[in-house]
Image (cartoon, rainbow, N blue to C red):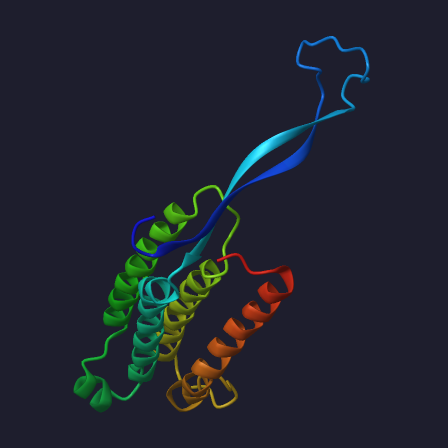
Length: 188
């Protein structure tokens, strides 16, 4: 087991298996499909190095979330602040597409590691990052394309309420996913 896995223990064991055949022995004693035979099994217990999995999978996602927050904070209607920050809606779209590519490559790498399995716990973090990328792109376009509406709670004062709610909403969603998966028995 290379790198991130270490062998904890290995042993043999027997398990009684029910087969739908008598394997051509014509014993006549057992009704077809009701015979049990012992099956020899080899068990290997592995332990995964958590820090490697954490660094490879979660750190890029956390950096993506941080950069998304920075992009969101740069969104403004004020030409003076936009000029000082170098903000344009097109620049936000370009940055979001780059972050999407990074997230997608990480997600594909994770899927190759767990090929054929159901959605694993950490994949939900990637799905949340895709949704966050979409929300930041739509937010940027919405703030810069229209007039400021006094009755629009989300877009008031350059979208300050959306900016202030970014981390609480993101972390609440991730916590809810963690509790939900904990109830199902997390695989990973």
